Length: 403
Ligand code: CA
Image (spheres, protein in one colour):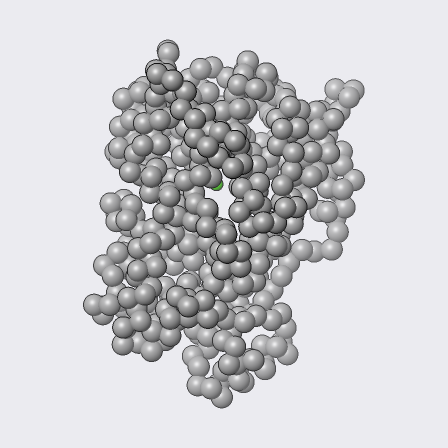
């Protein structure tokens, strides 16, 4: 079938891609829904703006960026262009555009407390009778499920799933460059053009030509650096940990005080959050909700909400028995509740996982002799990176008074 085109190509300026190009009615209609516009109110990086003050970019621009990379894959990578049907191209572009539609504010803290997962909510928004479902189904019957299937890795077309989610997918390629740009950490960038030029399809698997290995090494290194410098920065983890603790405390105190905004109630009551409430939960409403808690009768909630608002964040140190003992003693002496004022967080970073199974998202390289090699067998740099010393970081966070 033919998909309706917009009268002229819409171009949206973007600092990463120059322009985002939209010439399909269905894409344009989705962009103009309330659900998609909501992504303007959700920051891309939960706590990193507390470290990098310009990291205020949102999931709206990231989602458009992922769409643009998928669109370019569909039109500029000959193997993809020739493999996918028109309907599959539209489906995978929509999956790129919508892959984060179910993200809530402060994802990690929020998902841990409310026991929701943004992937589940994403598929509900696409399939459960929202304005987006209607646009997709009016465009073509069955389209909503096909888009959701790509996002949940259930599509019979494995190539489409890899384009959206694998170890070399449009999602990661956009957020690495975008997050590097907005944080100012220039070593997070890599040569996207070169990767697109050297992408191939072998059976239904995305592979990279041997001459593209350097660009992929650079991309893996970018990921490695961005994890330690941005995503796992201890200050960002302190901020997110405090938000998580605040929600946790709200749960403990029952949330029946009028200073708790009604939108927080389903989050702390372990109920499934109705989509109409989820729609209204964003960074702005959360900020308002946190600020309201400065009137809460519970002294801990009052204190945590003030600290979050004023960026009076917990300090951190390595989680060793000696450090733990020292901080615990100080917290006891000061009369602090250790459940709320001593936060532990361990992270582990794996910039690349050398799976060997058939369908698990490893990166494959097509060598000059035509054979396929898994990336770490084709690159010394990637091999050393994954076989080097363990990459983990185990910290405790506490108020500076307890130092
Ligand atoms: Ca994403």
